[in-house]
Image 1 (spheres, rainbow, N blue to C red):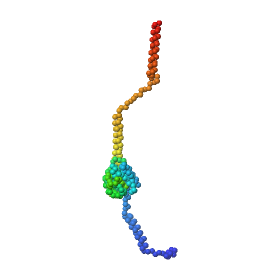
Image 2 (image 1 turned 45 degrees about the horizontal axis):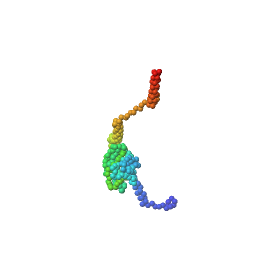
Image 3 (image 1 turned 90 degrees about the vertical axis):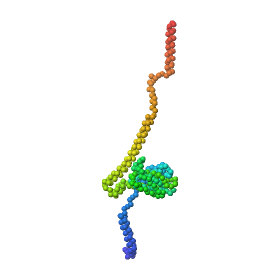
Image 4 (image 1 turned 60 degrees about the vertical axis):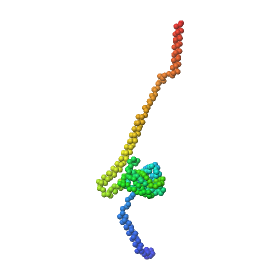
Length: 291
């Protein structure tokens, strides 16, 4: 009997075996979990959630910001016959670009075929590093492209050179960019068993590449601005040299009221009076002679 006089239910051996099996499974799961390393986290540095930005696009392309969102109902769209078709994306971090992906989920649209990938460490800039031209297949869904050798970049420009299909509009649903940050790149080098001297040299080379590219871009921008200022200054000098000499009109000085010339009418009246007086005097002299 049980504690309260109830008959105890006999335990079956099958039930004991079931509990033992669950315990064994838990032990095996713990062992296996320690045997395998966790899969590395693959970060999309072109994601809006990570801090990426849509910085520009060709005039005819609309909805470029949709490329940074994981939403199959949104997409960028542009007439396939447009002369310019490109977008500029600001990544969330400076990374060594290893690969990028393009996805299109629209059923009734044409798709981009050849795409040129350009990279830069500063923006805006006229100095883009050409990372190659990649050919996408005429299939729906996501396609990934490896970047040979990788390249340090903070800004990417995608130029769409050609397209598949006969529809009027070309669409693109999402762009992803994968790579390594500076710290992750250093960890990879450590895993390759580099010596301390080699690692220090590698860090110095990477820093020089990043800083050098930024300085070169800034120097080019400064030179361009200086050239524009010089050209504008030369234009002003040329205009001044070609302009006719200015005519200077001197304003006569004011004359005091007591020295100002009398009006013509007053001068004539005074002249007439003086002539009459002279005539009267002459007549008086004549009369005196006769007497």
